[in-house]
Structure formats: structure tokens, C-alpha cells
Length: 217
Image (cartoon, rainbow, N blue to C red; front, top):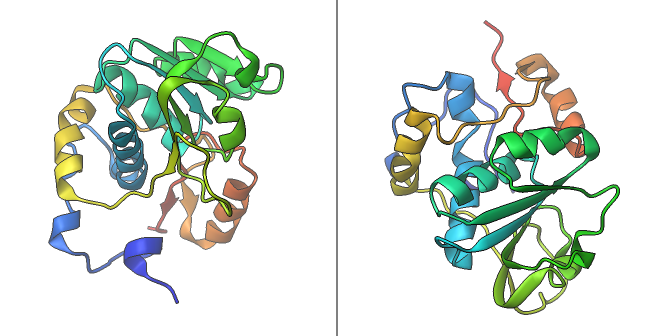
């Protein structure tokens, strides 16, 4: 059964519980604002639960994706991470650096788990939990947003976001100032008539940031 609160929906209008809503940052266009709630709350909530704090280091697996691009920025601007590393394909390394990554790792050429450097927190957005376990420091944390069909090895845990207004309002100043910004895939916006094509493109895992589907004027 479909549940709009859990799965989302494609609609020009929708009835929503007030507790889920926050005012759009004035600096952002509507498409940019629409791309943010799920990914920015997932990024923030996972980092908070993993215990990232000032001076700690972070490795992001899938740094160029919708959640990954926000993890990098929030780690630096909100949590005060001293060092952020992130993985992506070759063509997206410069994007990672522009978002604040200190180390951009080309996963097509480098096995991140074999690097001598280990991290206080590893945030897995791509489903590489076993490899992530080899990249975390003793006593560190691993958070994944990819559901597993098996028990997660310690210290890993699965995180699923629960939307709430307070997180959106807390992060609004960072969006208004431009310290944190949405990343929209260059192919966006897709017209509503091409929603199927948009989801097909998303499933290729080649998208950068978020996809936006816009109603036809």
C-alpha cells in the first residue's frame, strides 16, 4: 500500500500535516527548496546520531548524490568537522571539493578502505557497509541509509529520517546565508510528463545531487 507520508508523492497540491512544514528560505527558488527536505534532514539526522562534532573526521560514501552533497556541507558548516573525505566517480571530484571536501576519492581508481587514514564517522549512502567497517577508527560510528537484508556489523546502524519542522527551521539560516546550498542535477527540471524518464535516470545512479520534477505551466 502507498503511504504519502512515507513514500512521498508527485502532485501539484497535497494535504500535509502542519508539523512537517517550514517556510521556504527566501534565497532559494521553489525547485531548489522542494529538493531539500528529505535529503537535508537525512544528512543532518544521520550525522547527529553518529556523534559527529567539532574536530572529528568524516568519510562520505557517495558524496555527489542527493544526500551526500548535503552531508559534506553540513559536516563542515554545522558540525565543525575538521576533515571531510568523500567518494565519487572521476568526473565529480571537483564538485566534492567545491562543497568543502578536504579529500575527494575516485572510487573507480582507489579502494577507500585500503587508505591508511581512518575516520571517526563513515556515512554510507551507497550500500558498502562491509567496506565502511574497514575505514572507521576504533570507537567510531558508521551510519547507513541503505537497507540491509542482514544484521549490521558493529558499530554500524541504519538511519531513516522522520520529517519535522524543527530541523528545517534550525538549518534555515545556513541556507539563507548560502553556507549550505542545494545541488540540482543539470538535467533538471524534468517536466511532469517525463516523470518516468526522471525515475529511470535516477536508477542509473549517475545523477548529481537531486532531480526536480516541475509541473507543466
